[in-house]
Length: 137
Image (cartoon, rainbow, N blue to C red):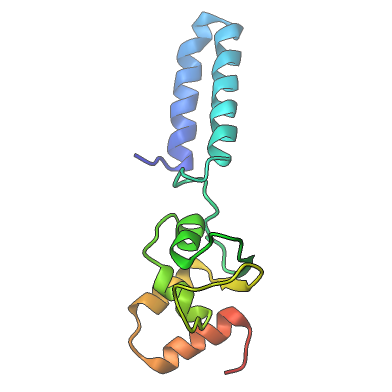
């Protein structure tokens, strides 16, 4: 169950207030535990909340490494493999199953990927591709 930031703060403050009667040592241990949990979570790619999600409005570039493919990139950047087709389309991949190390691919923002997934009109697809690649189609 994911908590929003205000809910998380409220729960932490509630626990801290309960521990105040236990002294400073418990409070410091709790803060240390929370900090360690956040740091470990930030470096865990499998963790849905802390993976390299593209949640901002700018696309990014990714240089293909040996063993990379679109479903793997989709999992890495969006937390799910379901956007691999959109990645292949945005990058105009002639063969969706074949990318070579050293190639640079565009990783679009999540809003563009979701819009691309829903559209059926070629002009909308071209506009999204142009916007994410910075190309003139």
